[in-house]
Length: 114
Image 1: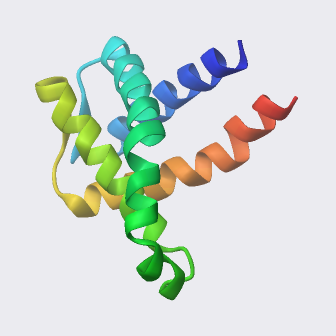
Image 2: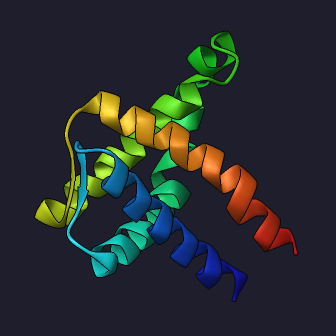
Image 3: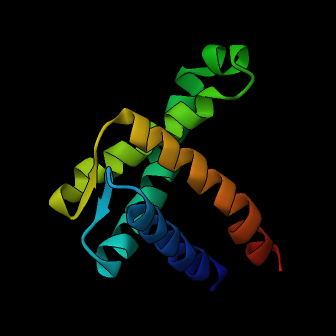
């Protein structure tokens, strides 16, 4: 049940970012839920592989390269979704990845613990 609540909150976060920024577009709440689900799957499958492959640069940047990996997974999710989810450029994906991480830290994680 907590996983489903986290999924819905992530969809709302994606919609909020799409509302605030022009380069980040979602076609609606249904697309946000599907994007949230796909992002969860991509983070579970692809992200660990990328983290292991980029471990030296992640250590050198004191973990900041993980934001780049998150931006890559976000762009991969947008590519899988097609025209329902569009990110204009890597900079926008990086900004969105940082915002998602910050919001999840203060909103989603406390809900999952409680």
